[in-house]
Length: 120
Length: 110
Figure 1 (cartoon, rainbow over the protein chains, first blue to last red):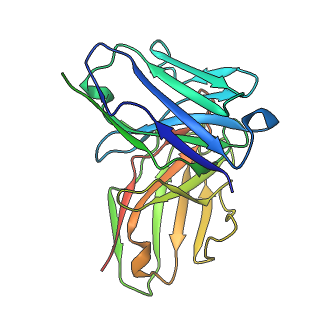
Figure 2 (cartoon, chains in turn red, brown):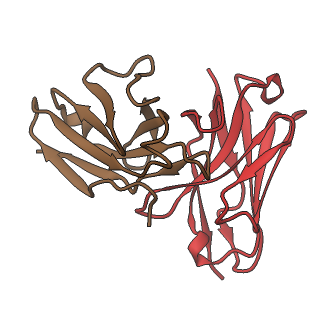
């Protein structure tokens, strides 16, 4: 059973960089065939896809966030990470890491989500 | 503003059937058979309920079904149960991005 777990600071100051890591267990990122994404959910709002990374390191970002987003992978630790720069209060959200078996394919495994608050 | 349009809320009584719509364009819902539906209970991560318009993952009750007509996809829940009360989100592949979501629909079981 694949499990994903987000970790990182729950509080980030405005203008700083939000950094989160997703640890995958029960399956290897480097086995290929899957896309590893980040999605966020603003409080009481809908879902917004942020971007994905493939085990090879290739990435694809939501055009609306592309200028501020970096997603990276560390196959040796079976982790992938999100960095979102120049954050504002509008970036306050629950951030989920998740897996799909293709670009545009459904998300079959989700992390539990982690709330990140942007505040001074 | 979400890319896909869903009703903010729907309601039904136990045992009844309800349908949630998800309206997009020919660049997303209407152009591809890659519509998914997710169920989210408060404080929990979303759960995949329907994929590729009408397919159910293993373990999802057959009370849940999906369909599509033109630019509108639909999720139907028959034999409504109290545990079905949750938020539901649709998602679609698009010509400009792998995934876009609807704004979500709150289902209330009366």
